Image (cartoon, rainbow, N blue to C red; front, side):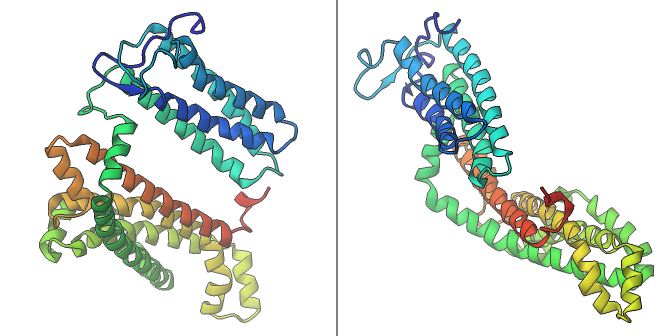
Length: 365
């Protein structure tokens, strides 16, 4: 139906939008179809379908609106979003959903390249950003409630120095230091608990109690103990990451089968030899589960701890300060930095897990 209804202009009155902003995202998704076309196989139709749909999606609104002859040279217009626009976006959403499903099936093939598997979530994310931009601009949502991705990107590019200083203070100092201390101490204490059984009965219940403490109550105490700099935030991260590592390591050490332990005893292996050659390798999946969980807990803990006292730098400081000034675009730019940093950190741990636990059944084809 949207092919026969007037699409109209793409923004509420007084809310300018560039036509090119509706052009980039479909072409980015079409790139996935082009990549698929370069890999001929059973699902070649999916690549053709994806490419054609997204190229038409990028060009069709311009054709319906009589562009480009009626547009100014800077490609910026204002107006009211017509019903045809929303029908067009809805129909396009269903088409892209089907196209990405076909691309996902192609990525699941044994001979498919890894890049194809990464394209599916990346292109789906690009489509969500596209819908965000269209919805915010078309409905005229005030930027103080929800800024558009284009506005967030502009603030991000204009504030790279500030965002880098915040990233350095929060992630490279507080998160990494607290993460290393918390995970390392949790691992060593788990080895001690495994060696001394009565500690398991006394320490684990205490660990469950401490892990249930609210971070908003612990953070001010750590600031009083260790000061306003990054050391107090690292202490909060240590508390948040210690017990997940402890519990998962103990569970991994106990996951070794009795037959494997009996075999090592028949070889006259001592405790250390059994630990290094049998029990720790079997515990690696549990260890990496704890490391991945702690990668997100550490970042959240450091950011929240900065709400309760910090130098004039840091992600948590930036969020709490800028939201008080109603500078929502800067808040979202800081959130983007935190999300990207946390995702990359988690991804590096996942790659390390795959490289060291390739023998695990979950990685077998």
